[in-house]
Amino acid sequence: MGHLWGPIVRLHPGVRPQALESVLAGVHSQFVKSDIPNRVCLLHLHDQLVREVRPALLALEIAVGIVWLIACSNVAGLLLARVAARRTEIAVRSALGASRRRMVAQFLTESLLLSIAAAVSGLGIAALILRISRHMLAAMLPMAQNIHLDWSIFAGLVVLTLLTALTFGTVPALLAAWAGTEAGLRNSGRSQTGDRRHNRARAVLLVSEVALSIALLTGAGLMMRTMYALRHVPLGFRTDHLLVTSLTAPGGLYNDQNIGAKAWQPLLDAVRQLPGVRDAALSTVMPLKHPIEWQTIVYKTNWTEGDVDAVVRAASPGLMEVLGIRMHSGRFFNLDDTPTSIPVAVVNRVFVDRYLGGGDALGKQFRYGRKAATVTVVGVIDDIHQDTLTDASRPEFYLCTPQIARDNPLYLAIVSKYMELAIRIEVAPGAMVAQLRRQIAEVNPHLAIGEFSTMSEAVEDSIGAQKLAAGVVGVFGGLALLITLAGLYGLLSYLVEQRTREIGIRMALGADRVAVISMVMRQALLLMALGAAAGVCIAFWSNHLLHAFLYGVTASDPWTIALAPLGLVLCGLAAAAVPARRAASLNPVEALRAE
Image (cartoon, rainbow, N blue to C red; front, side, top):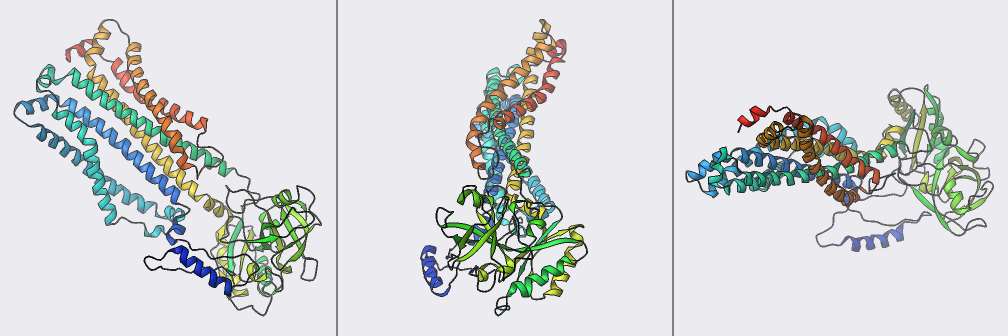
């Protein structure tokens, strides 16, 4: 692509990249002469491959860790309930001589068996999801075809399984081992002190689950608002019925000829004649699709404050009509702009606002390039999103491709090797690709044709990192919410069962159904309120990790941070309503007999 080279260098151990970069820069300056500023820059290959998705993968790791903590807290709560339910059994074992070490070993073994069963099930689900979503991952992640389950995954799963069993099985095991034998044998195995201790531990775990869930739900809310904002960004061009591809000419083939007249213009004329093609145009850079771009110097004139850098692009007549970009004033290039006519340029509004103070640019002249060439401004286009949807437009100007002759200082850099083709079609994109490839190959078999894609796909690709992050945080936020609601339901159901006698006495003394329901709901609301307060604090800190993905919303957006806890509390109250109604439906006589 012009004078852009990307060699791959493997360094000897101990060699610093900075030292090699300085050596290569010296060699490069001796052999490469160009009117475009250039330099040598060494980049780590791995960093380049994952640069765009690394923040999203970090968000994935954090979300997985949070959901893992929530799930383990839930399981720990269930194990605590199991310990309380087996108090009589534990007391009998202790009375018969079972040591505390043996008790701890028994419960840790049970915890380990649960972890192993969950790990095996999770591994199977992971393999299934990977197989189903491989195509989707290929569109979002670099080298997605190499993603597979290997020995490192299995080793990590074994370590995680053991860690889960030890971390969240130890507390229930210790509580079981240190439970009093006499208290366990008395009152059908119920110990009010032990029950209160277990209930406090489960309540702490549930509050932690609520807090972590709110952190994930807040992140999911921010990403949803970001995606909404990105979907409604005014692009400045039309994406419908627009195909884009790249064309690369072999080096040296047109050294003695003007490639614009010899290759680019005949190809453009042939494509326009195809049935189903409304119009076509060439440009060195298409919006959101370009792998490279060029900047050049715009020298000081009587209407600029000083020498400035601007993005320079070359385009054929008709590009604005093909892309659907609106002219703010003046005109775009036409067939009258030939190599023998006055050199013209079209600038964008940012260029005018920054360097002309928003005044009238038509008819103004400026010089560009190290070997200065002069052009006259004939048009101003509206700003468009050239790089990404989240980046603001930069000062740029277009040169007319037919006017860039071999003596132009930018000829070798921007039109001699690489161009991009935009085609406005009237039929379905899939029906045109094969025909377009054949037509281009017939007109010029020497050109290398890139992949065809629609402009809509280019827009989607430009927000791929945000889509990945939004999907990850959204899915795991939903999982966290379901697990937390299950934990709340389980805790309240257990508490209702424990307080069967108390509820029976209350109802026998005249308490009505509303009073019983209110008692259970108040307990649920208290737990969720504590978790929500802690979750908001965590969200204020953790949301800054998503800063790189956010657009149109801040990490501390008050509406999102307020709505996430409110939504979880409402869902939690709905989950608590079932145990509450069950408690209110108890028959006082049967409740008292149960004890």
